Amino acid sequence: MSAPSQPAQRGISGLMNSTIGAKIAMALTGFVLVGFVVQHMVFNLQLFAGPEALNAYAYNLKGLLGGNFVWMGRAFLLACIVLHIMAAMRLSARNRAARPNRYAAGLKTQTTSYAAKFMLGTGIVTLLFLVYHILHFTGGVIEPDNFHILDSEGRHDVWRMVVTSFKNPVVVVTYVVANIALAFHLSHSVTSMFATLGLQSGSYRPLIAKIGPAVATIVLLGNIAMAVSVIAGLIHI
Amino acid sequence: MSDETMRITLHVWRQKGPNDRGSLQSYKTEANPHMSFLEMLDVLNEQLLSKNEDPIAFDHDCREGICGMCSMVINGRPHGPRNATTTCQLHMRSFKDGDEIYIEPWQAKAFPIIKDLMVDRSAFDRVIASGGYISVGTGGAPDANAIPIGKKQADEAFDYAACIGCGACVAACPNASAMLFVGAKVAHLSKFPQGQVERKGRALNMVAAMDTEGFGACTNHGECASACPKEIPLEAIMVLNREYARAQLSGGED
Image (tube, rainbow over all chains, first blue to last red; front, side, top):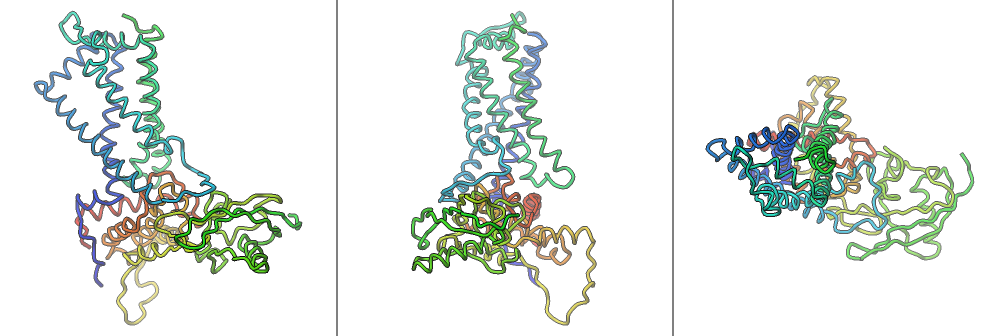
């Protein structure tokens, strides 16, 4: 008995050149990104605790490892985003090519959710929002007047910056719409991530199926609570 | 159930050959509710022949739901409206008098259309030939129960072995992916002691063959499992993902 001859490419490079490998790359980078999104939401909820809590948190975070931590984190996240998008482009091009001729009368889908159907669109909206969000609250390009203010301790006044911005209905609508797109993306992708890693099996199946929608709902409610609370007057300067 | 004759309007994909563009053509026909879907097409073809018209080419063989030949998308669903039912086991009683029925071939780059509703599914044969087997030394017949297999393992393997290779999973998938088919084969053989020897090479080779044939990737929509006439569970894909990652990361040597 001899084992069948095996494809030449193995290990990491073999993995990344196959459809399943590209899916695994999407899942692992997606895991990092959703992890970032969840902690970002949780720590930002300190907006409700007032200026002292949020500004101190931001100040301490930027000071970690002599200021290097945030830059290492940003580089790592950027690498994950680039890999995630590269894998998505490769896979979606391949998937389109796999069915060059559509069904004339169409397919009647049985199980496809809206979230699953619009993954590419919600992904693109999320990416565009990410650029806007970084220019807004990280770079201070969009509303520079709100950005360059210090609190009484001489720290960047993150709390005042965010609260002032969310008094603008246009900004609030932008954040709410973007977060709805993100929630749809997460609703399918977090469950899909487990499936791609082969972890959605056996008695865990029903639980894993609910993880995506659960994470999406929590992130959506947490994030929009901040913008909506400001414009509704629950938080004011 | 009524025995009354049903008047049906069919919109059938007609394509003269692999390079023809193809289009939907309409036909009016009558059917008895007891007829199978393929018998209804047989009757229509007799009518077309008697008028010296080209009959509709479609694949069929056993007509008892086990060969996997009868491949057609009926009203937007592979094998038609009934769950866990092949086209040959679908009966006209699943439709109503006056219905309009759309019939199309599987659409996938890896399944080129030969004519009308017939597609070339030899891509599946090449995927199977790449690793969907176990190698057995020849000689005297071994005792039937020489290798004990647990009841649970045997049941699970049998569930995956129920795949008839009809291609409905590919037809239903938004990406024309063959992951459910390949998953069923890999899961079936990896559950058995006899399948262990070639386990890693099988997963690597079958996925490589699947990619080479031009099937798409899985986006976890679940359409394949819902279209499967043999109810292969979506879990086959999770098993394939695991088997493949395991084989790649451990260097792939059996």
